[in-house]
Image 1: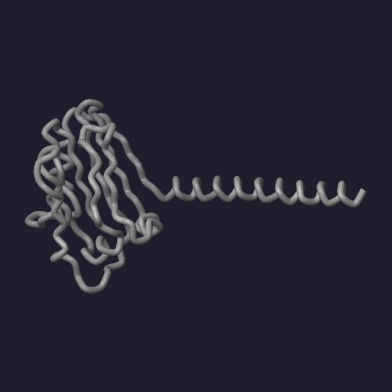
Image 2: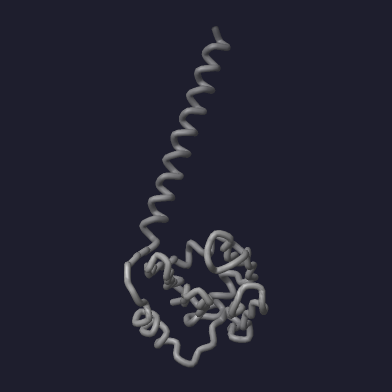
Length: 168
């Protein structure tokens, strides 16, 4: 009889932990979703949006420069642009254009979310996208914060895809 009682207690604790875990994951997912600002717009030409966004960084060299075409050249990270101390940044803004879908995507990632990656470098995983094969960038959130606000990446593929990333 005592064994049966303990079995029910253990089963109750396990069910409680599972329910609380699912609730915590759901809550974290909802908070994460509310923190990211994603806008997708169908348009024929994104040039006006990119020109307006890029104008704020006139004369700036992007912190990260990707090779002009797949397989030729190396990724260049301008670490000489970094300060000794990090700057408090609020968000990483991304503007992306896909000519096949004719969609312009604006994405705002809060810096606290990027800090969760720790000291791991940023990875562009592009196997299924027109940007080409995987590229490993050894750029951490700390390095982006030491770079400070400004242009992080401005890249256009030969196929017309465009990506503009800046920190605020």
